[in-house]
Length: 389
Ligand SMILES: Cc1cc2nc3c(=O)[nH]c(=O)nc-3n(C[C@H](O)[C@H](O)[C@H](O)COP(=O)(O)OP(=O)(O)OC[C@H]3O[C@@H](n4cnc5c(N)ncnc54)[C@H](O)[C@@H]3O)c2cc1C
Image 1 (spheres, rainbow, N blue to C red):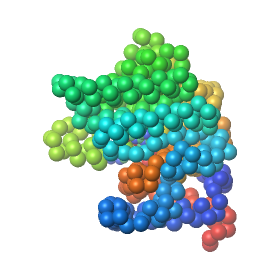
Image 2: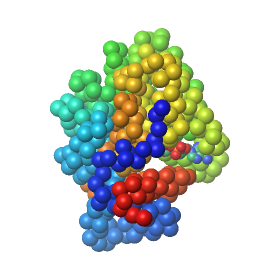
Image 3: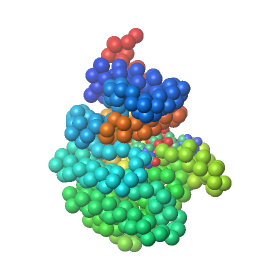
Image 4: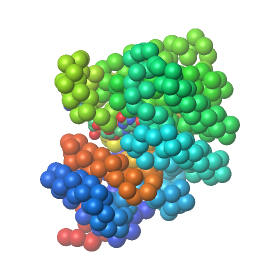
């Protein structure tokens, strides 16, 4: 029986010092006021040029990020590969809105695909469409509003960047995720993902879109995508997640007086997430999934489904994924049991990765029980190693 309780397996790859650092860090970011103050102070420090880079690098960066460049991620990649866990190199620079930054993001994502070609420890590549073009264009396209001529050119650039990236992944036959983002730009992302799946998923699953099951319309989206794929004979790739922008989504719906795209409560999200994973697993010959979650129950549900239906743990259409520095008890125990597991290894220059780090810190404060769970697991392991009373 699969269990996530074994902290010896979960933290086997961690030295005593690493474990103590993680304990300290989760203790700190578990306090809402510290995260709030930290967010303000970091912004201020970078604005006035205070030397805080080294502090960030030695603490929160070290826990959640692989390094500043692909080469820097070697240590994290090796630590994962030693336990048969794949790497998903995630260039985590966010919030840039210039053509120059879009071109440079495209180049960097292509570099991660080059790395995947040479290094079989890379399980998937990944990118965000919002890193390749302006939000405004994606939003207008999503709402099917007419674009001006310059905007049409911008949309074509976004399309071509996504095409270049997916072509590269297809050439080396290595799968790639398209991350899901805010609901007001998601229709444009879904449109691009469908075009790429039609083009590149005819022989095997290369392109994966992401479905956020905190949205109440995503089960229907998955069903419709499956119907199209059946009719046109291509593979569907889906990363299933609950969704990361809930507060932002609710706030915007309230401000605009529009319908809230998010489920009424956590239970409804959980129900759809678990239903989605069963729907996909039942259609495993057509749909390849990656369960992007830190939720133990959902991970167990998929593992149990595989056992009940005698589906191999290593079936190439089933993957589990977590983020670096989080839920190692799930990743390492799944991997020990022979399941396909990979972790996002975010990387980028310290200053540029700060928004990602703040989200991780906020998630660990706001997601009920997440920090508490990480802390109690680390504490349990520290006790087992007799490093604390
Ligand atoms: C490998 C990986 C890839 C990811 N990729 C993406 C991505 O592309 N796009 C993206 O948006 N996110 C992505 N995420 C983040 C993910 O969506 C979740 O925010 C995060 O993983 C927490 O959800 P959980 O399933 O791990 O578990 P849990 O801790 O069980 O669930 C927390 C989640 O439940 C939902 N929730 C909480 N409270 C409520 C409520 N009151 N009503 C309705 N729903 C609620 C929210 O989505 C919240 O994040 C990814 C996560 C992983 C691990």
